[in-house]
Image (tube, rainbow, N blue to C red; front, side):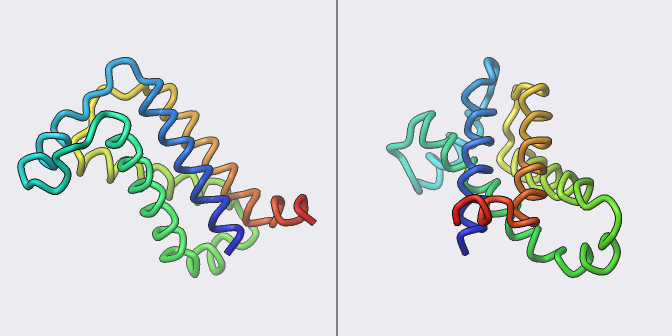
Length: 133
């Protein structure tokens, strides 16, 4: 449970940093879609960034649980980091395409994928839990 909280918080923070640091980010389509169906008519740019970051984190952790048996069978002694890289790439691209987010910084996106893959890799080895004790 503690591992999931660390993973969720780090991934949400990393994704929020991508969105907030990108100069030409365009989330107007998502804003208009949410406004059109009257889900949240009082939202602003920061709350949309938080909504997107939480969506990416939830999908990433969900995909990690779905594909966990495959990593145990196939990648037990191979590159586990590349598996996490693929999961993070799949989840962020799915959310960004679905929500129609454009103009994000490719450099920050690459840093996000590398950083979040490292977080998953270290949390898989219980790096954080050992530090807390």
